[in-house]
Length: 228
Image (cartoon, rainbow, N blue to C red; front, side, top):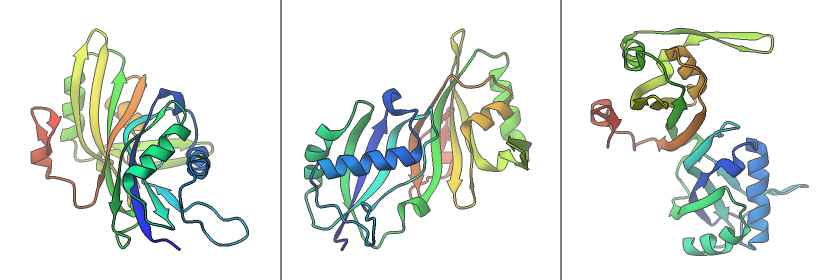
């Protein structure tokens, strides 16, 4: 029986960036079991720990503020989860914070609205002009090929904003806010390609924005930066 819902904010670093979403779920379940925490388990022949991640992180991508809900069979202090679980984690996974949230809140996956990223790409001429043209466009037709399937869509519709954080001889650093909900999710490497840049050398998710926490576009985009 689930009696408590704890929301874990954690970082995934370079050491863990090449594991799949499914492997990460298995890793968390094993770590929680080793920590001997009173986690709630599903019923049936093969019970699993009751936990959920907000949004899968693509293989090769790091993250600063990933979100995971863990349901407990017995209520505990959030600090207890940190102190008992942290020693079970490998380098590359770091718990940032733990907070108790309401059991009646929507499922974490259903509550995500946007994902923010920082990306590094090789040096490119007219980087600012490329971003301005993309943002000014009403639509940007795009095709995504996967094996024998080709999907055509408007990639501009998935991009809330793009800003240049750095543009020098070492390369261009972009920050972008992409839609991430049940209507669709923007993929940062595809947005980079649509902007006309070379493939990114680094993709880092800095934040997941949940429903009710997203400020207006005008408030976010001041001086080329996202601000609350």
